[in-house]
Length: 45
Image (tube, rainbow, N blue to C red; front, side):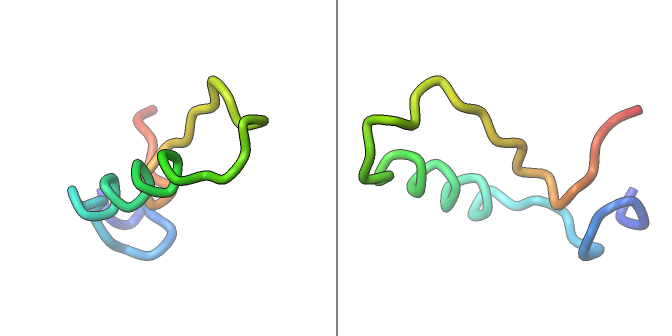
């Protein structure tokens, strides 16, 4: 699985938490209903 990631790492709980914090603290009301895949570039085929 790691060979298909950008950096050869698994996504951690800390990675997901950092992205959630970034979205929660984003200083604009213009970002609504967006999604972001936190996966180091890995996806299921």
